[in-house]
Each structure stands twice: as C-alpha cells, then as structure tokens.
Figure 1: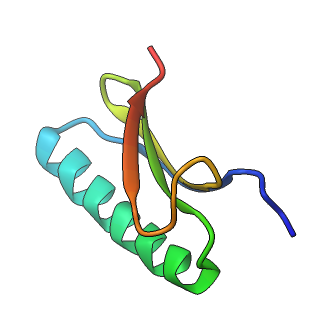
Figure 2: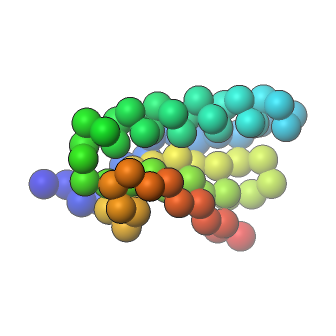
Length: 71
C-alpha cells in the first residue's frame, strides 16, 4: 500500500481568473480520485505567488482538503 503523497497537478497561471479556474478544476479532480482511494485527503500547497500543487496526502484525513504555504 503506497502511503506517499501523490502529486496530481501543478498549477501556474498569469491571471487570477485562470489560476482560480485551474485550481478549482484540479481540486475537484483530486476529490474524485480521493473518493476512489478512500484513505487520503487533498493537500493544496501554495508554492509561490502564482503556483500551487494539488496532491493526495496520507497526512490529510479522507474527506478533507487542507491548504499550506511552502514559502
């Protein structure tokens, strides 16, 4: 059983609208994958001003989405 975080998307955008749309789409897709997984939640990490990663993480309880900042 793999308990490492699973990177699902890296989002980088030049406009707020694009960033919001892309990030929301990636989070919704991650939630669907998490439902099939049933063990990990979604972790959204702000890497810098315009970049985020979206992953499934064993550190996030199933059914939850956590956010953190790397910088």
